[in-house]
Amino acid sequence: MADDPLDPPPEPQPQTPPAVAAASPSPSPPPLLLRPRREAFEHGLLPIPKLIFPEGTLAHTLAQVKDKLASAADGGGRVAAAALAEALQIPHEQAALALATLAAVLPADDPALDSGGGGGADLRDVLLFLYIQSYKRLVPRAHKDSPAVTDVWPSTSAFDGYLSALSPIQLVRSNSRRFMPSQADEEIHQLSYLQKHMANILTLLADSVEGEGDDSLVLTMETFEHLGFLLKFSEGTPLSQAATFFANSDPDMPAAPVPAAQVHDWISQNISASLEFSTEKSISKEVSQQVTSDIDVTMADANASNARNSTPTGTNPAYYRNTTFVEGFSKTSVVKHASDVKGHSVKVLNCHESVIYILAPLKYATVYGCSDATVVLGAIGKVVKVEHCERVHIIAAAKRICIANCRECIFYLGVNHQPLIVGDNHKLQVAPFNTYYPQLGEHLAKVGVDPAINKWDQPFVLGVVDPHDSLSHPAGVSDVQAESAARLDPDLFTNFMIPSWFGTEVQEPTKCCPFPLPEIYCASQSKKLAALEDIRRTIRELQIDDNRKKELTNALHAQFKDWLYVPVVYTNRDPNSKNRENS
Image 1 (tube, rainbow, N blue to C red):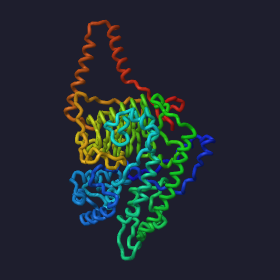
Image 2 (cartoon, rainbow, N blue to C red):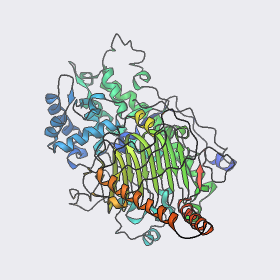
Image 3 (cartoon, rainbow, N blue to C red):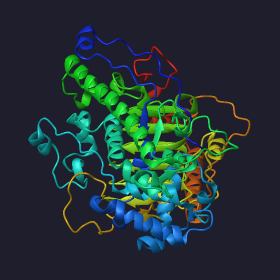
Image 4 (cartoon, rainbow, N blue to C red):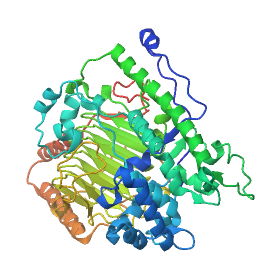
């Protein structure tokens, strides 16, 4: 399943106020905008120290690793977990995890790699995957009032890095969201990283031929296309079609290899043009924000009326067309169906005391900075990442899930691979998947999640410190194992009912949870149903008149409705609604 083509450009945004327009003229975009593949950087980095090499020796070390892997690869140039473990001197299970992570972030499905990793991975993909393990995330901008932020939350919080000063709920109260790197900022950082390292990357992928100097290293069109793991054009144009030296090649007559130096020049020119355009757009956005308003947002303002789930204004739409945002909701519910989402990924950011329903088949999902919320993720075909959340219930049906820096969260999982737990976590619990909706079976089949396989209770735990964090960490703690997750007490397990807000007709609707429930949880459910039936029988047998019995029944129903009720945001359903999301 290759990366889906980008959606058509979004609807025109409201015009910029004249004062802003005068202060920040919008640059014209280049014909083709080269972008980093966010998935590789957001979901493809593992905190395994032996996968991360010092920048000064990175190219030389990976060249040696390439020689080892090439000698151990099969005739098709594929690398198995055993060969990777031997070359990097890591445990076999970590090597298998690396290949599984690689499979999750490739731009197109690799059947041999997806089938448990038994077929191994293409050597070129492995080398690109190992290279970007040296990437460090963008450092957040400093808060304008750092002492005030420190007073909000103790610096000894379980959250490391920048968020050590902030709990998710304080993040909203202090309005520090604007100081976190934006999507555009992160992509500029990623593109700059690739620009800096592209010469080494091409040398690593190139084949040696007879010749002198730059002409001795060449790239075939097939190898060149593997760079699609790291780069893509915003218009969805394949790299080989955009490159003049490979464009319009005859499939029956493979194009001649091209000198690596020529490829490097072409990529460098495109990256420079994209960086220039993106940087100008970022600057114009900051100017626009300064001209229009610089007022802090209070917690009272961080509600549904200010929530964002669309392409931010003043930024390059190409950054956002493949991602749906659900951001900044408080004390409400949000429903997203397949017809409501854009692209193949969703990001649920900074939502508090809310219930978020993402009932759609997607490739990637991120839940970040949420608290006291429930997030339902219907069917995620690649990977879910949950980061910096507290007291959140995550209900997810997915191939993979990564949990980082969370506290007091419960994960109701239907996952085909072991849940990955990294970072500074506290009091996590896991439980079997516990819900369904009519389209769930269809969505699972569409993204390739097998409900017969559920490894919810087999967490894979890595270290506390994330070496990819740009901020410093105390020395000597990188090998400390992260806290694992406990199984939820079966007596506390409940089925989560998704209300039937929309009467969608489905030919073969899902009528129960497709993931089998373990016997101990089934027994607990049976006991609860028996207790409920006892209560019903007791009410029926009460020696009271019909009016009193009706009052008792109504009181029980009222209490249930009060517990269930949450204001609902109907996405794209009521254009006149006050709580309608921006579209």
